[in-house]
Amino acid sequence: MAKPSTRYVCQSCGTVHPKWQGKCEGCGAWNTLAEEAVESRAPGPAKAATGGRRVSFVALKGEAAPPPRIITGMPELDRVLGGGFVPGSAVLVGGDPGIGKSTILLQAAAKVAGSGRRTLYVSGEESVDQVRLRALRLGVAGSPLGLAAATSLRDILASLEEEREAGLVIIDSIQTVWLDNLDSAPGTVSQVRACAAELARLAKSRGFALVLVGHVTKEGTLAGPRVLEHMVDATLYFEGDRGHQFRILRATKNRFGATDEIGVFEMTEAGLAEVPNPSALFLAERRGNVSGSAVFAGMEGTRPVLVEVQALLSPSAGGSPRRQVVGWDSGRLAMLLAVLETRCRMTLGMNDVYLNIAGGLRIAEPAADLAVAAALVSAATDRPCPPDMVFFGEVGLSGEVRQVAQTELRLREAAKLGFSAATLPRRVARGGRALSAPEALQLSETGHLADLVAPFAAAERQRAPKPNVKADAA
Image (cartoon, helix red, strand yellow):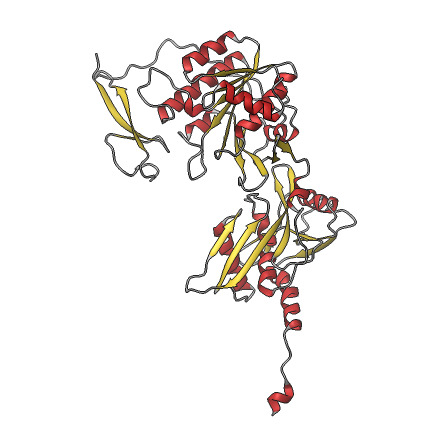
């Protein structure tokens, strides 16, 4: 019998180390190595795999029908999934503790079960009575949902093998499931990888949609090996601050739909309520006569979303000014400040700069550069932006404003919410069709960031007190 040995595996990236050490050499994380027992292989060369079947190759050209969908009855969730759950697929849902992962999945499972499909909910973190109490609070206690509390992978697989009519299976969570032939604790890299692979294999062979709930680390990434995200067909992240009532479900990977698609929900006493018009929600508490505020017309997946960008500048008390950013890239803010100082001759370096995307939304697209610049210039000159104007455009290092995609969708969303003006990049004739903009929207095209700064600077000069000529003469 082979002599058992041990190894140390990083719980963040999966790198294997022969002995314990404080820092992982693969990802640089500290105190993430866990001891796992392995069976050492007998010495000798590895045998090549033989006896396989011949794989048939087909032509690339062909017709494929769109995959069938399991409609959840929650339009925001269906939008993120690309139209609903796909039978035989695996979906990974992650988010901070208490953000609402179990709540939305229990609501969706109850709706799918109510439509006549066999739906199973396996809880590894809560007892059956605890899940029943949540269902009672959500008003779905009467749903024909199959509920179980189990953590052994062998028991779960044996039970799912008997469920021939299962359409949707939810495992909450994958970090609590364990396989008894692995000498490691539940939640470790080897356990999570092996359990997820077996569950995904059974889902594809039986044809039911599988949903795995995953924990996140303190950095906000999904816990466990990175290969877990490659094993599933879709990865959904729950975003938002528990201090806000908004919850944003974002698809970072989707083999059956668009990535970066979002669904917006509002946390209420009766669970998560869908928000069909997130732009109106994000702008509900906006005040249009305050300096340092600008409205950005952005795109989240295929959906146009209008959000408020807030900026605040204050004199720095120390020698190192602060740069505090919420909801945007801090490196891009530093770039914009450098462009404003160098190309537009604004003095911002000795001020503390605070930037916030109102509503808890995180923006990643470069089209927000122009709106952020407008908010910064407005805060620096203490002159409000026009309250009925939206901004979008990418800013380069030389100060030029570059074109962005989906211009017409952004403008239509702005006109629908009552805005009458838009500042956008200057259009360049490329032989294509003309821009179809709403007639009620007045367009202000800009080719350089200095064109945006000029009206604010002119208003500041007019507001400045005139010198006292008589006093100077005296």
